[in-house]
Length: 431
Image (cartoon, rainbow, N blue to C red; front, side):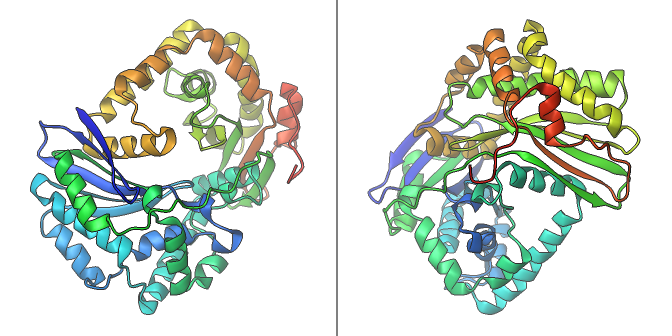
């Protein structure tokens, strides 16, 4: 693989990873703006803008956009996250110029037709409704909101019915003008691509973008606490977590290893104890979400109403023992999982394009696979135990979606977790 980086005169960064053995390419534009960039009144506008970009430009209708990319067998899509939005395509090598031109067109020339906006708002309302009706979606939205209440980082990416319905074409144009700026964007391509050719395409189609930096995202302040929603369900959805580490933290790879040790697969501590030995749930796993200045370590489980009273204390006790009980074989297995996942991602041009774009945005450089592996290898048993002790000593966040009128344990809250672990209580909101 051959990674090259060029910064254009207007501040736009172009990065490519040439994979000569492939005949296809994945490419896209990544923007350092997502739901965290929004004011309370703007909640959901990043996601709506992503939808509206495909609904017509000054020279193409929504149907023409779809027909042009599919006429060459390609695909065009987009996604919005807390801190990033990206617009991407997968095409044959010879169709890279078309893909760049289409993405540049929708980013710079979207018409934001009022009739299309009305239709797309209703599509997003259906998406919000679907998420609200899906317990394992709702429990995660509630989890993030409880960790960071009344903060952009804690608000749902989709927004609310009220905010989505309030947006006008001028609102979309103003948000785009503020955040979609050259210094805030990366054009990334991987697969059958030539770096110099992609740079020239970027210069021709994106060279007119403003070069000024966008606004800095709102800072976060982790709070924690507990929240429960009663629903007419057969099972209980539960997410328990603690404040994690930001991307650039020295202990970032140690907490990633910790997440894998705790619940990264069928050999993980939680899966073995709670699923295999006790049969208290079908699946349980741990994760770590990193952001610019914070992170969130969490454990998700779904179980029957009759088993939650037994599962909850077992889960908390496993967390409490982690700092003392994690072993070197646990660490070795987790490292092997992370290394394998890294190597497997290198075989996908789409995964690689996204990876190198995010690395440039986060670190200001592309980390080689060897550098990442070196950082993973440097994680020791002692560092993971220390990070476990530090993480699980913090204020817990607990999100539960359970059966309406069910017999949920009275102690199913963050204070009970803290008391059992001897950890910090949740802070007052705004503290």
